[in-house]
Length: 192
Image (cartoon, rainbow, N blue to C red; front, side, top):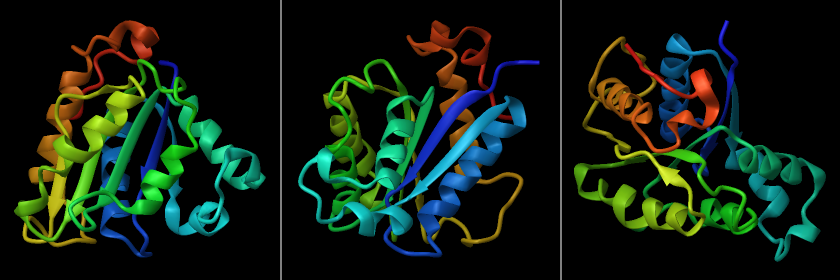
C-alpha cells in the first residue's frame, strides 16, 4: 500500500455553503480515487473570525496556529478562492501573510478559483501564481477555474469540464520537478 500524501486544501470563501468549497471537495475526492491521501480542508468561514484582527502570528489562537502548521507541512497544497473584485478574498491573503516565508519552498500547489463568469479566469495567473511564487512554491502548470455558467453547482458529476481539468493538472504533477520528492507517494498522481 502506498504512503498517503498529506493534502491540505484551503477555501478562501467567506460563505457557507460555498461553491469554492464544493470545488475543493471535488478535487480532493478525485485525487483520493487514485492515490491514498490524508486530506484536510481549511475553511475561512470557520477560522476567519479567529485571525481577522491579528497583526502578527504571536497573536493567533491555537486553532489558527494548528491550521498554519498544516499548511506549512503539506505534501501538496490545494488552494481556492472565489473571485472578489478581481482577486482572491482579503481574508485568504491575510491567512497567507502569517505563513512562514520559507515554509512552502518546493511544495507543489494546485491553484483553483470560482467566479461568476469566464471574465475572471485569469485570477489564477495574475493573482495566485505570483503569491505562491513569492513563497518559492511549485505551482502546478494547470489551474482549475469554475464559473457559474459551467455547470450546476452542488451536484457532482462523474465527468465534466472541472473534472477533466483536474485530471490534466494531476497528470502534469508526475512530470513536475518536485515529483520525485515523495518517491512513489508523489509521482504518477493521475485521476481517471
